[in-house]
Length: 99
Image (cartoon, rainbow, N blue to C red; front, top):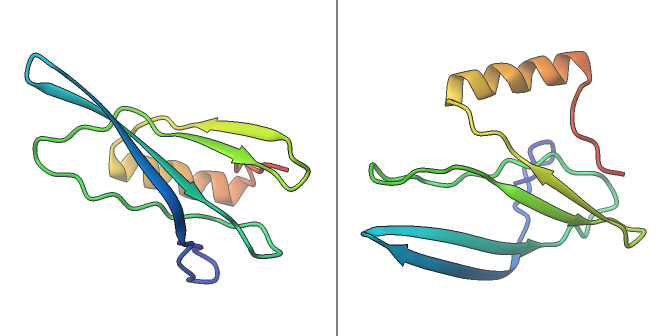
């Protein structure tokens, strides 16, 4: 969802890659979205997690308007800590800007 404009960004394509070993599933979800707006987006990505689910990384590949590619790799943190880091980044202007 585009946080500033409260607009849902439509999913164009999704693909799962699953590897199962010793009772554990390693699931990679590939999703494709396209920004059809004429402005940059601040995205809120929400994913429901069950009690038996863990998340270790989110990696985002971007194709920019000029055709160049950028990758953003997240650091996983507990919700409260992540929200505090986000607020600090916004307040100090230290956000990830891909241009």
